[in-house]
Image (spheres, rainbow, N blue to C red):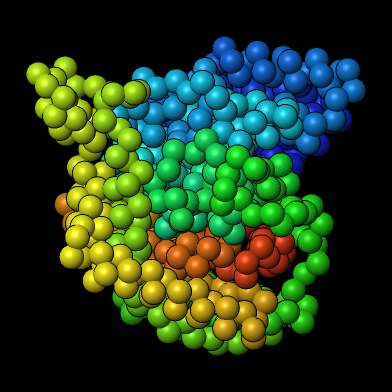
Length: 486
């Protein structure tokens, strides 16, 4: 039998249901694994040992009493921007390093109602602003496949934790690729749902019109299991969609026979790693063998995605992060001779360089005389990008493309070049601007021993279609649960 921590979420639930092991046993297995391995990776910001073991024992008692919660006893991690009652939530920032929320985020409530065990909170780029998890005040996370490489970002801690078998699955957030990009870097599955499909209540906001919570898992089926729990309308979130959620596991075995799948020509860009392109092309060939009809499509406004995103996202961040002023909660500078100096010094000392950079960019874009030239124009381009996708989906049921143009780059390689760092998300940002779902799955290993991801993109609220195509590929490629040697 595999070590308990090597099991997928679905295997974990099957084992717990059949009595092969208890939640206490599997939770301890993960906690021991974290203790022995995570000092190399730094994927967790907070590990709740006592709380996790208490939750696990409680889950075992409930199961003995006939409870059949869909995640009863499953040990999970949470990105550290999801509010957890009585458990520190830092956003990997000095600004919130000691903040303990008085309530749970909606998705956390849903996980607890389903019986999940919350092991701890995972590392991230500060306030989710980054593509490498290097901007974390808690120190960078390393890629378990190669400790000299980044794990992606901003949900790098969640992806690294799942890849290194430090939790059965995790939740991340995706504003411009922050679930899919680290999933690609770490060889795991990452699903960004339709905007509004999963409640954002209790998630610390970066860019409110772009942020979306989603699962990071070992298999496609595991993502479907988590979506079954976290998806659905929430009256506490004004942007939560009224559409009814569905059973996402029912679509997995339908295959792709007769499905029309598009290949966006703009996503196979000049300068992309040739191995990445070849492995994604192998995915396309595999889908053809499985009966899909492949069509080339065009998304002509793709080239405007990065500048559009880096006007809109910082503008929203500038507004959202205005609340961190040292008055109500969070870090407060001791250099506070008067109110104005307290404001200035709190923000100067509490935020890291990348967060300050984006606040300044956003404030500039929203300032008098520049709003129309930058923010308003970017919103118009965003509409054009969305229309590109809608037109493509008139012809095809899904799109397939690389998740990233390269494999994971070296720690520190792009730290001094923000523009190069921003270009890491060039193939994921469009999905967030449009608000549609995308899922990244492993599609191979490069000659350097690093994972490569392919992303499946579908129309609004068609997560089931994306999961269906992804599951077909996962099975056909035989790349289920790739595992680093750490």
